[in-house]
Length: 352
Image (cartoon, rainbow, N blue to C red):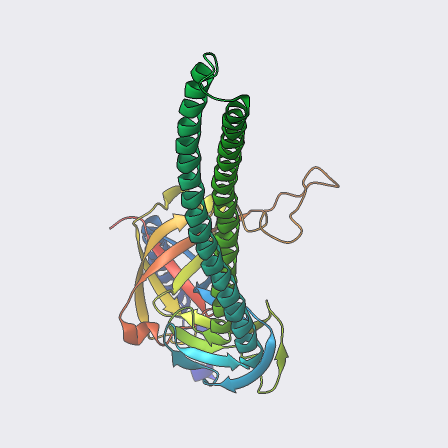
């Protein structure tokens, strides 16, 4: 009994574990808070970001049945590489028709030129006729003047004088006729030249038709507009495609960038040229650097299909986001791993 009383009277030692744990927690919280304060004083972060890139849709420019396909989906293709061929036979026939029409129009030009040469020759003949008629008129006129003087003294008969007068009238009439023929020949040359101009215009139009037919024929070879990965294939052999129909798409090489949607309250410290650290969800250990390139001219909401109208209904303030384009500073091996649409986390370094 004496021993039991001794244990009951012994004072208990204070428990020091709990204060130590609380102190450690406070120190850890303070360290974490200071670290976060320092970090966010130099960085602006967002996880609302994704990889973007230039995607070129390949559209058929002419209609027809698909004759051949020279690529597989999700493989690399080169610019101007023929990827799809549309049956060209209809367009070859149209080209031959246009070329035949051009040959016919060219033949008309040759005929017009021959007519110009012919009318020019006729004009020269008519001009020679005018000169001849003028010479004949001059001679007959001199004879008439001479006979007019002779008849006064009775050296010639009245019949001879009348004959001389008649010859003068005939010579004058012949000269007038020759002059009219020459004028008609000259006018015919002008008319033929105008007709030739019209024919030449027709030839030019036929050449345009030929060029257009060649262009349409060339469109039967669907080429890659850029180098990149061909995807979203929407064409099969024998399929009837229409002009304007999208056949597939190409994700262009060296066109990847980051679109980061920062809150409007985060933009104060961000400007062009700042360095950016980028982490991808797909490759957590892959560290990528970038540079702030530019800012969108409006918020994402304004570019949406149905932009909000704050003038209608009850107004609730929502923090808007501004898309910021970030250029990637990475090697080709790193860029080859990225795909448009991947989610990333970005951190803009505002202070070194």
